[in-house]
Image (tube, rainbow, N blue to C red):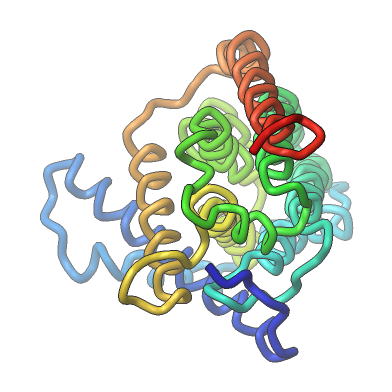
Length: 318
């Protein structure tokens, strides 16, 4: 397996394009699942619904709230999709990556923290009770999934012996990490749904709080938040491929195409889970995160560390 290498400068421009296409496909697939669940026929209008919604929001007037901090709110709104795109810069597509950072895994995790701040700012800045509640809900929910998510990333870095994403791909030559890191993979997928504030972890934008963070946003502001949600879930799906699924490894087809196909499969799984699982109460998710996910991901990290030490010359392995 050939490790991904730093691509030319123009490859940076491909990331938002590919991410946007994946996000659009994911949103269309979600509409198809919703239509089938409601017993409706899947027509061209259903598939084109995300584009129609985009056009509607582009011409819709922004909403103004008395005494709102517009600079803070709109900074948060813009940062949501920006954080998703920046997170995807370290994702290799086949044998080329836009930015092969030596700490790419840490970079991806750091952009998630930026998303935390961005969504909280988008809720707080509107001077709305619902927005504030939604923002704090996202932060509290993050405390429940972020530690298992970090342990999952640490497990991959331990198996690869590096924080570079391309090294993680190269380390899976012959055996993908998903085979011997299934708990880390499952924790990563759960956190992918949570960090994109999607169902079943969508309490930050719940109906019982009138839309939460989205409550007072309309027009372009709302479009950026919704686009950021889909871009983030697409970026997480793309990141799962080099971390757990061998990157562009596969027979017959070129590496970049294998990467796209694997990303589409992971994204499809996440969208299906998002559409089929009911919203999880925050207290129950927090209990599950602290009592189940954290111990399991720690145990997974310990097992991987023992295997890695056993393989090293100092550990007495072959």
